[in-house]
Image (cartoon, rainbow, N blue to C red; front, side, top):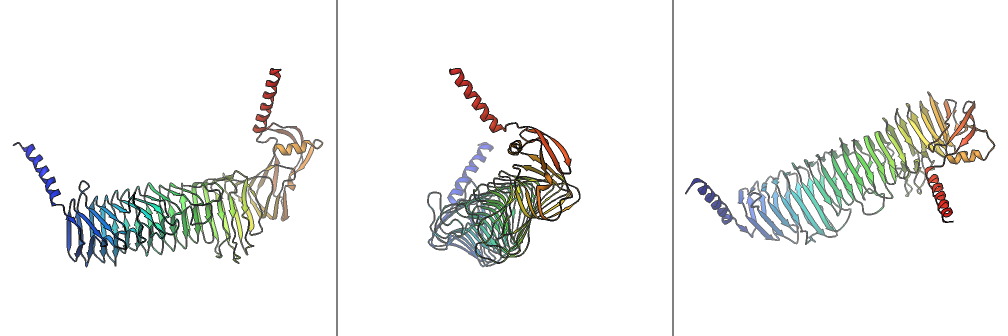
Length: 587
């Protein structure tokens, strides 16, 4: 017999021998201060008992490969665990092990335990049969070191009133190198638990290509001092309620990730359809390329710090605010895209804290279907308000479809010492929209360092500060004006005024030439407007033109008006002419 045939025969004998040596274990296997080693193809199947137990410093090792994996099945009506590790014991679950359980998959207790695996498949319930065990959980680790290597999968299908989540960590470390996947399906509560919840200083690093799809509840809950979460490149998180909740001095570091918070209703609550919910001295850093799409809030921050760069934040709900800041929030968004299906920013007055909130948007774009900035207020009579600053700087562009920069939410009670300050700063920064005064907070606008505030129609605010500012103002009616309680001007300020077609129609109804005094547009109860140069344009966006004659500073005569129909009106006129042509042809 030649050598090749001998090698082939030896390989067949090895495979056959492996299958022969495989053992089916139907009773609990315990490594109590000892080492237990199991082979390729071994199976474990227990009822109301843990299949594998390591305690007293014991060690369990599964010597399996993907081609002939170990299978562990635990059927339980209580809290029995497929793999249980106590104190400083450990388990190496090998390569490609499969764990099936109606209760807990892997659990550690005490301190110092550890387990490792790669290509692990962990099922709680199955796609065709949901578990109804109220204690069901995939992994529960206490002060343990967990490493799931590459390509591990956790799948849960539950049907219960109380859901404990997929992974619960209290201290210790939890790591994966690449492509860890978690999916949770079923029927149950939509906002009471998390896919992964971590406390007591747990350190989580999920490597690259992490994926979580929680169609039942929340995504991550990261709580308590020094607890941290690191998301590597290409992470994807999809959750029904809050995708990522960090509180109590915990921290998040992420880049190149996608979050989708689907939401279950149209409420503004942070428990529903929120991408990242940050509170109580926690911090989050998105170094680049974060992409958060949420139903109610992409970011919800109070008493916490968040910074992000080169990222996208958007909302889809009809009652939503993409970025929500409340007391003590310190949020910085650089070169990012912020889009609101309702408002882009919610400057909340509903907290009974007095700490100031700051949102700085540096570069990038901001867009909103309704107001760019809205405020909400308490409805329970809380006596305290907050000071909130919204800063647009470094050539950011912000615009809303309704042409409103700030508006107040309805309802609630008057807040003491509540204020909203909007700052438009720097060359190239252009923010468009009018301000609507509120009885629930003091509203101020500051335009500085060659920034531009563009608006049309009436605005109403308590304070207006202009410091080397540009104002682009469109008169939609001759009665339009900007009402200001107190105005403060320094440096060189310019107000460029254009006339809408509606205003031109008004002027045409008067004898021409018509005299218009631009210095009356800003109605300042206190302060002066002398440091503003008023300039009237002689054309508008629709292409309409007129002739102007300056007769005094800010005062112009208007004559020879030529009104060009706006596109919609022109289309209507063409349609009417076409219809007339058809009627005439038919005659």
